[in-house]
Length: 237
Image (cartoon, rainbow, N blue to C red; front, top):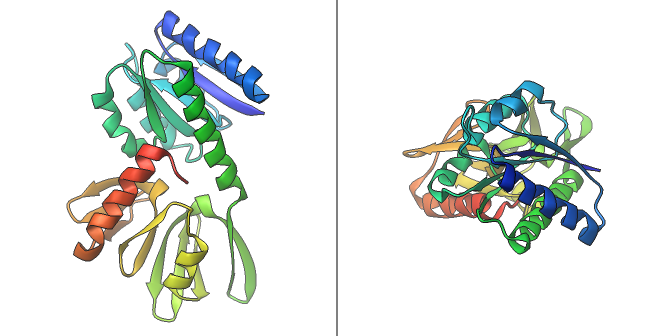
């Protein structure tokens, strides 16, 4: 079952989303558990970290979708966020909260279904993807989604996750090959970054969730920013 939260203060727009979800459920045969909220404040008051997808309007009277998303990201790194908005200029800030994408109003079913296909496909890929390595005399299997970045350290690679750091006898190039297609990019020759954890880019630094600040080198800058933009725009893992 996929648990989806719909946050929309306009009743007509909310009905459109609910109707699209009902049609999507019938078309795809997907089991959906749908909860609706009339404002970002209502979502925050009742939020539990068991949603798979949040469909958030950006402009709402009490608490905006962007404000709600920022607060949710402090307690939930996993939920997929898709903004639905009539004002696309606000959606550019979506990278701050790792929004997968945004949809424009008026919301057509074709665009909605295509985006939900992409979101659910991405989540299935992330659930399947793990990295297996040996460190400290033991074998470890780490969820790729939990890896924040990898750091070259001589003949070892430091795998930085949310909870801990593993020292692995390997090369950054070898682990980069294993993580191909999983949404990682080099910001310089010594760091491989999980783009899902980039919260901002300030001048020549990538700011990561958890506070790490990694230098973006001049040779890697263009490719790194292009990969980040592609990740934000296409919702890749």
